[in-house]
Image 1 (cartoon, rainbow over the protein chains, first blue to last red):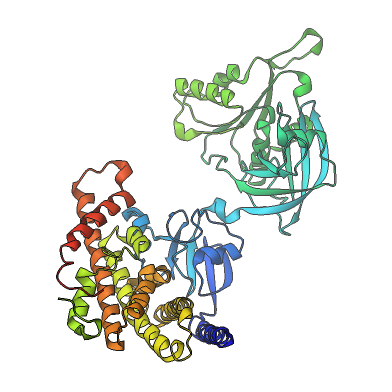
Image 2 (tube, rainbow over the protein chains, first blue to last red; image 1 turned 90 degrees about the horizontal axis):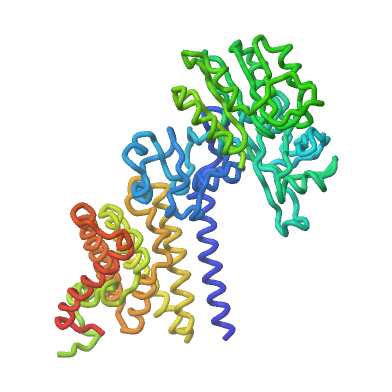
Length: 364
Length: 201
């Protein structure tokens, strides 16, 4: 009995030793550099598949099969250092993809210096540890969160219009951590601070937590940035249309217009019910003063006599037509509830505004 | 006529392993890589070549270990464990060497090696060699023959799938594993026609 155990142990140990030696000398590719999107270079240990190597650098490509080469989700463009395309990849790559250097990152080993391209949004997605710096009651149903990013040190890098997923801990409405998407309403110049605008949703788990339980100084988890809502670049005028908490991405874009000194005529139409539902008035009048050609137009749908409201009345859809020039030379950005976005899209279609001049973000 | 096992000529054994006792089509071993990778001919040739190499080498290695270490020490009951670790480490080592020094070969063959580490056909071949009392030379020929038989089966299926893909209009539900199993089953029936020719078990 002892001999058996000994023999198997000794043989296994010998084989393990052999493999260990082989691993050290044969499979040792040393440190190699992987350059991503011509932007960032990582010094990594060679010899592993690209997918897991990137994971160690906290870059998470989508993958459903866990790197076995069966789902085809982990595609990246490898411009240099990928070697020839393997037969395990070809079933998942179309002719166009092959022509564009697209590869399956789980099948390509990092052996020499590499130049790769991954979608920007994946490159930047991180998990953040954040602290609630302060909470502001903007309107009876909307809170503004000013959040301080503790980790990673460098903060967040995002495109104005993008959102983060904010995660709240379990509480009486949910036994697991829950997260929801919130657009960032602050400037990219302050990467360590982000502002979020959070409307209380009927029965909402995350917004309920934020409105009822969240305290200043509390720490939370956020992930991002995600999304492709952004300021369209052209020489045309800019029109922003928002309702409710849909103002958030436009605040970030107004900072962008200011920072990049964009001279385009900009109009923001913001629709809500009553005067007390308006918020960020100071911030917006600040933009009116600083930006060369910016107009903020609040529009209220339920005005009463005693409000002494002298501004626009009605819904955002009643005002759109007035702000679209006859030659349709305007880029329209819409953000808010899906029903409002749809009504606006219908009006724009009737007016014949080209689709490439319209972007929107539906808050559901 | 029944031939005593030890007298089987090497040539007979070789062809028997390919046709009458095809490891995939008559013993149904090594089915999972077969189903997964028979979708194109090039990949199945690569995988087939890797299998031939590994079956030949591991049946020789396992034969040596079995008759020179396990039998003298009366430890035959450890053969499963031993065979498995030998196959696994051998495959791993070969993969590393090819990956590093023969990049072109690696593309054709090496990437399939991890897929066959746990291919039951390979363990099956080592076990048959013990059950059937093969000599070292017989073990090598049987290993090579079985590997070639497996390669033959997967390339046949891959070619048929290729043909079907370009000509037939398959119902969606049959695509992939479904049609592969049907093709394999039919081929298996066809190979049964060989079975009367030589008897090696």
